[in-house]
Amino acid sequence: MHALTAAEARLRDRAREVAREAAAQAAATDRSEQYPWPMVRRMTEAGFMGLTVPKEWGGPGLSYFDAVLVIEEFARACAVCGRIAVEANMGAIGAIMAYGTPAQKRIAADCVLSGDKPAILITEPEAGSAATEMRTRAVRRGDGWEITGEKTWITGGGISRLHLVFARVIEDGEEKGIGGFIVVRDGEAMPAGMEARRIPSMGLRGMPEADVTMRGLVVPDSMVLRPPGGWARGFGRLMDAYNGQRVGAATVALGLAAGAYDHALERAQARRQFGRPIAEFQGLAWMLADMSIAIEASRALVWRAARSAGPNGFPDRLAAAQAKVMAADMAIRVTNDALQVWGAAGYSRDNPMERYVRDARMFAIAGGTAQVLRTQVAEQILGRKLPQTRDGFARIAAEEAA
Ligand code: FAD
Image (tube, rainbow, N blue to C red; front, side):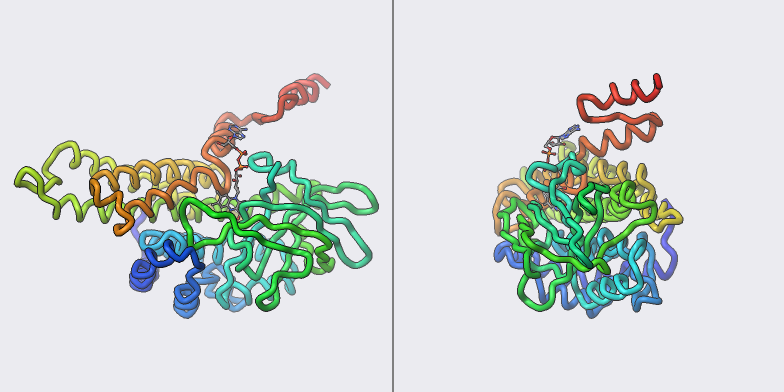
């Protein structure tokens, strides 16, 4: 693994310092299930929101790799804060900075630099892994677009200002493809035509997840995010931005596994049974060794993916998927083993171990499940399409025969 430069090490250490404050409020955030606004203000003051925003738009113009260093430190202390750092630096903001008009970039940069965690709206009740089966429609009406549909599991629904909504584009009565529509909330109320209803989630409870309904939501044409290549290839290009978010999610999984491991290491040295520190029992010593190996291996993949950002500014698709699968599976295992090291105390809500276990469970599901991403990896290493619909291979065979 590459050593950090002096500037990277300074950035990580600064994040580690502020993340101590995140650790102090993590349990309260989990219990209250409230978005940690005071911590977000602190992260904003410290310059950790909008790290990847280019200098011309008022940000520090740092890399995905720099953002990854910061995200890991926050996730180690408080996974919700880690996720906030992801979405304020990757995902919707990355897509808008890559494909947006100058006016859109101005709006998006101002949002994240002032502390917003944007929301990205793709998933629907009937279109999860099969995201392109989405039904939300954006119909052209004069100078604008009217959006109708239901989204689900939208992170930040109800608290985010900047929204990137994915919808089927209908123009002149014809379907053109899938496009991105920028919706910005002004003040406390949700934008007219958009409503959010919170979903009670297992972990990461300080981060609102929501069903979002859009009825009569009007978006001016100036707020359409038009990726190069037109509507037909729009979804693929917009999803390229998701590779950045995927590396971010992998980093949160990595960080929270590392946080749980730190607690396990400390506990194994401090707790005595049979007159000896429990760390001396080989069953636990090997468990800790395996945890450290898995964390280091995940970090290597996450760093490689973060450093792979190509000319479009997004990390490589294969590297991002590999890192996310590895880190997500690893975090489930490591947090679970860390709780085991703590024994009954780990099972108590007075200690952070059960929170780490609950928080870790999400990463193999959200942002591409562990199964779907394995298929993506397989497609790329095999250099062939692996269609998931029943008629997919028949269509490929027909195309090959023609
Ligand atoms: P399904 O697609 O119904 O899958 C169910 C199971 O079947 C899974 O195990 C899956 O791996 C498996 N499966 C499905 N298809 C295949 C296949 N082809 N091969 C093998 N196995 C398959 N979405 C957003 O748009 N924005 C967000 O901000 C957002 N945040 C989220 C936050 C959280 C905490 C969670 C849990 C989800 C979030 N999501 C978000 C939604 C997330 O992206 C979806 O949950 C995910 O894409 C999977 O869809 P699904 O849950 O409907 O599962």
